Image 1 (cartoon, helix red, strand yellow):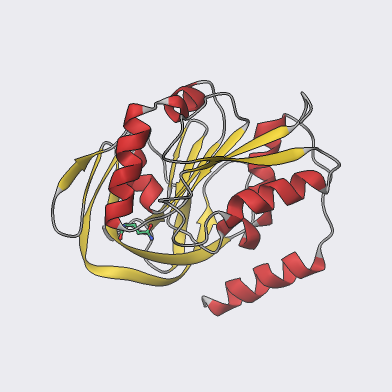
Image 2 (tube, helix red, strand yellow):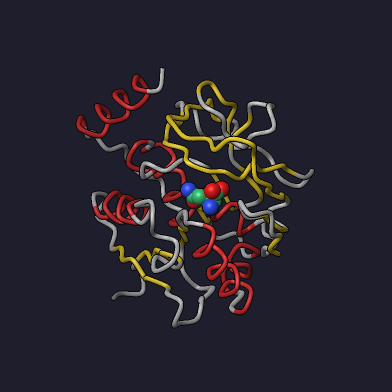
Length: 237
Ligand code: GLN
């Protein structure tokens, strides 16, 4: 590994890997390599520490029990919190939004303290939200609609320090009937979109890569990625 290798932290794939969101780290690595950048994935598991020195971090979704193990580990090893304070980009999918909030309630109504990287809280909704989710981005630097697959019982309410990632055009999103989706706070982005998200939304992948590398990234001409993006957007309509 050279000094200039881009280091992508895949956080707790052993407990937050149920929904294939580890694919987001693969996409970041591949899109970096296609620009001639060295990149590697560093898997941060329950039996190790969480370093604050990586260039970008991704976290995936999980069931309630696994999510609780992740919450305890990230509380005991606060490297992700320190990385975010330094402005390192972090991508948190679904259960990870809930873990990064102040607290979440499980589907059985038990309240679990989160790690307060997001000014948000999560409580179970009456009905599970499952299906294609499409939003218009609200984050400066993004112009393309975002799409993913949502599958969550929790509904998330944002506090004043957190902003939504997108406005819902199809699907449920954070819940609560206000048609907003996801969380943005500083360098940390959360969304309910599985997919994996970055395979379906290359603009967001490059947004994170640009933040992580500080580089101007040349566009990639990948017809198969454009085809997937168009197909998935159409599937949600
Ligand atoms: N267990 C959480 C919920 O149902 C998150 C599920 C997920 O990550 N897909 O809300």
